[in-house]
Length: 375
Image 1 (cartoon, one colour):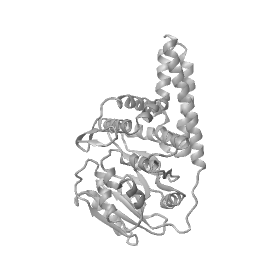
Image 2 (cartoon, helix red, strand yellow):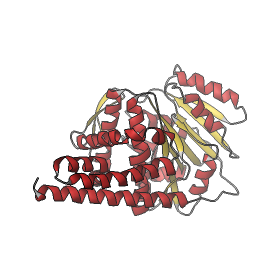
Image 3 (cartoon, rainbow, N blue to C red):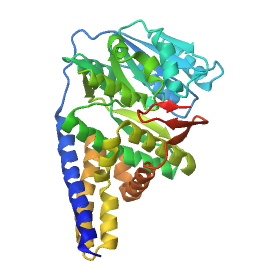
Image 4 (cartoon, helix red, strand yellow):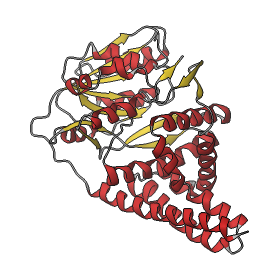
């Protein structure tokens, strides 16, 4: 192949190796960060929307009630009283009578983003100024509330967002997705944190205050977005307030979706990211080390040597994220599937450039340029 074509591939691989190095440095800086404990932690209203009862719903819910924290209430929402999650919620609430808690029926959401609809119903019932919003598939470690509140109390901090350890279901596709989340996705978060600060949020678990939420338009404004979590952090950052990536790492149970459902979920995420962060999405090319190295090895004479170097740096990157930062047993056991996931991630990234239509909760929607919905 002509040098005209080889040189750009070598440049891309070099850039990707440089990214891997940056990400490992970012991981080291993240691991070195700490937040001191508060002598007088504020009372917290915990908001958790529920929808359906999966295998881990009860354990995840119980993790909220067993927090080592002096004062908090737990507010839970279902769309319909017949939702199986309501039964689970009542059982857990009865198990912990000393924790103030309420179950609210929000009714069906008129908007596609049903999660924010439930959060709005919970928000109106919250007694405390400090809020912690957490998805139903999240397990919070016992000291999680204390860590997040200490971080939220720092100067100018308006929002704390938690990175997560993805816990896979039983399907191959779920394992592949979890591997990607626990390596490539986390690496992107930590590198962004180091280079430009945190201008996003991960909606699985977020801590903020009512006043800070109101300052960005409130939940009513956020409901029009597919990635309402990203917008929450982005709008907060735009106002000049600080967003922190917490040292509290939560467990995110992603379920056991089969191929088609998992693929649609990935594509929906890719198209949403492209709309929310167009320049950042293009820059994700440098995170695709395995795919770039494979292309170079196949098409370029002598390219295999460059590819091997790229793969070695990528292996260090994966180990730093999945094993050092997250202590993830999945990465340790299924490391040999990482190249497969990384190729799948590259394919999804390419397809994410095409089209702006998604199917979400049975509705066909168009994602506008600002990341909002067009019905």
